[in-house]
Amino acid sequence: GNRCTSGQNLLEVIDISSITTPYLVKSYPMFNPHGLGIDGNLLFICDGAAGLKIFDRSDPLDIINNKLAHYPDFFAFDVIPMDGVLMLVGEDGIYQYDYSDPGNIVQISHIQIVDDED
Image (cartoon, rainbow, N blue to C red; front, side, top):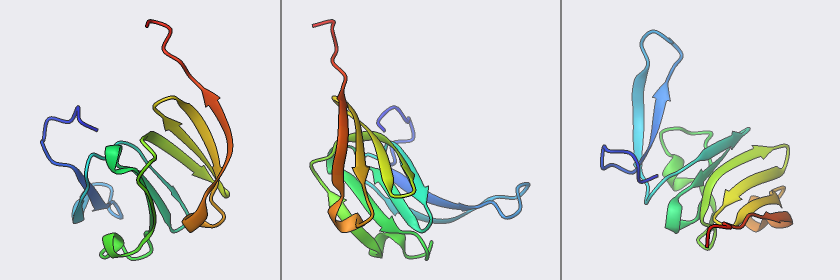
């Protein structure tokens, strides 16, 4: 998101096989990343106004070239993928999607959340 003061919008892959000496494996440029989620080899990234992106993460050195899908109209803050169902927190509520086919996710439900202060 944009609250980070580093000025960099990156996905960083960190090796934590030795918890006492983690190290950066690779960095990938992003537009404005917020939340991410993993289910198996699927990596879901909420990339701000650039939308939701789904990658195959099986090769951490080449994630950026393994994009499975891009949904530019999704402005998501966070995602929780689990067993083919994606919980997505968007600007106007919480959504559920079936992602059994990552290239064609299907909306299951939407709970609208409205700001009553207006």
